[in-house]
Image 1 (cartoon, one colour):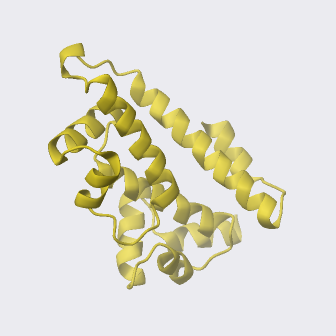
Image 2 (cartoon, rainbow, N blue to C red):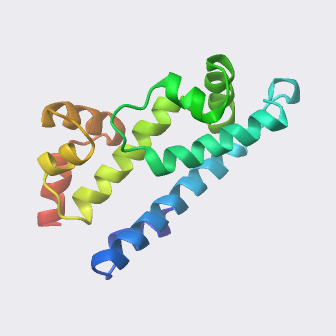
Length: 160
């Protein structure tokens, strides 16, 4: 995982190619994280059935494509997945080790980190890109995810 993060930080590409490269690396990081979560075994009688598993994996792919949409709701995600709320919430947490909205938040904060570190975005620009009306609310969410404020990250980047 550290190697992939290092590759992201030292990406020499520019423009559209850089964006594609960084998106691929974010996907790679997520796969590594999910693989780590998958090593935790679950009792077989508690796993979702094969059809539900397929729907949950499809929903995860959907989230990777739509995590920046501002109004994702549990109801709309249930419709998208073709699952009821109980199965979606319980199955997603069992399978991926986090809640649906925790997963979305992590995707958004990873996107924000890339915008700030490699995209040259300001804190206000990153907040806006993620749909935050108030940059302070974004900063609070960012600090909760990463343990440092986005301002600290951009200062470290400037002087590091």
